[in-house]
Image 1 (cartoon, one colour):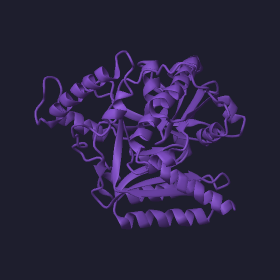
Image 2 (cartoon, one colour):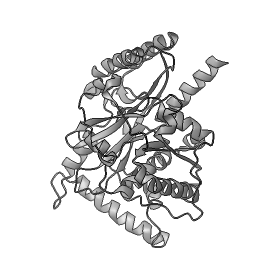
Image 3 (cartoon, one colour):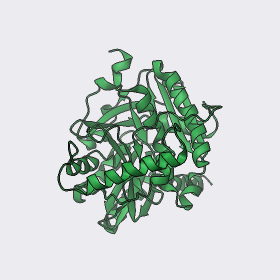
Length: 385
């Protein structure tokens, strides 16, 4: 097996519960590179009501790397206010270029400080940690990477301390963000609340304990309609003009003046609104099929050095999940954070609406994973004190 086809050669699983077992994951090749980015002071931006912006900037590294690598598949994971990915060493310069230009772009367009880091997997293993990966098939022809081993969490912590930094580009020339969009309306909870769940294993816990805890939580989610999937089977709603209009104008490369970019985007969105409002196909575009694909391909659950869920659930299920996690935390097996809100939001990467190779990142619309992770950190700091 050559390293440039390592990820493509992994067989996807369609059984999410198997990912609770360490043997479901495969170590990355030692000279692969891990890239990370996240937004500084994202909690303040969330408090200002800018979480759609936070999600869009957080997903920008994935969109830019997809465009930079063309048809070559690579593992990545979206974290709400940032993202992580891994690529073969031959793409190290491309990854560095993307992260560098993203930092300048985020600052210039949104006045957001974006951190970024890039390092070899071998450096992570030197710390006694690992980066292992699996593929989870959410539907036919669509899968997402799952990560385990503790390496990404360590890399993100080092990034926040200034380690392995990728400096911003001197000229704010953004990478290609084609396909990145935030046009869908927020999705109201249908069963009580949108619950963001973040669970990580404690470093010294028994190896099997994390799988047992996450298995119990997934058993609770199995009781929910569509396992807690927050996106309706017919897809989210689309209103005109969409809430993400001003954000999307800043995703377009500056070949023309801002006013012309806005006019062009407005026309595209008007056509999209018309097409999606129809019950029948418009030419080769089938709106019902496209909406269904948005629901089928959404990543409302993932493993990212721990379990992350965005669930549409009632209060009793939240209470049951909280009880499971509290008992596990008291035993020293896990650390966790929860955050409840009224809506979910969708951030998309759609190379072409005529194909099915689009991906859709789901998060809570009032802080989601970022707030849940912060609650986990606050609890850890309180326990340490």
